[in-house]
Image (tube, rainbow, N blue to C red; front, side, top):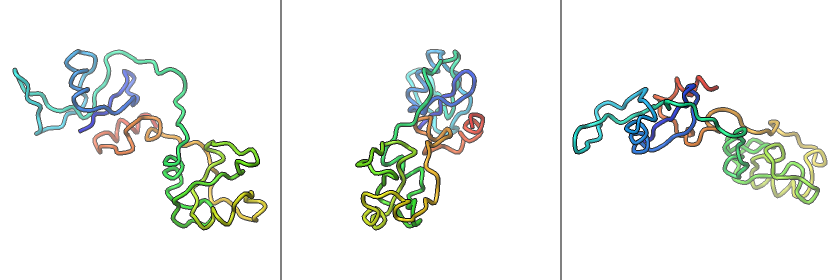
Length: 165
């Protein structure tokens, strides 16, 4: 069981285990906003409902902007596992501007690509191949990208994640 942690301003911060959430509540660093009924945690003195959503009592300043690191898995997920050139199922990633020509590993230069298109394209640009990208690659946005763990969101979290969007 996982618990959504909200900052004092009700923006999502992270997803933690229910054990960590109970420790935060017991130490009065957070309060429970929503509980999971019917499956309590038993302690030596009492039972406590498992928290589904907690809010911190003090505001936590998150340093810097939340930049999503570029990963192969992230590029495939951003593009829906569909080739950026033909639209078929993609299992690899491709540099729009090839690395041999100075292309970097950035969200704007990487697209999901099927094996066939990746091999045919080789060391050329889409313009040289007379190909068009189906989408404009860019950095992903939204809470499911900036808040760790929300890609497998609990339905109870939806109203709180919608506030941050």
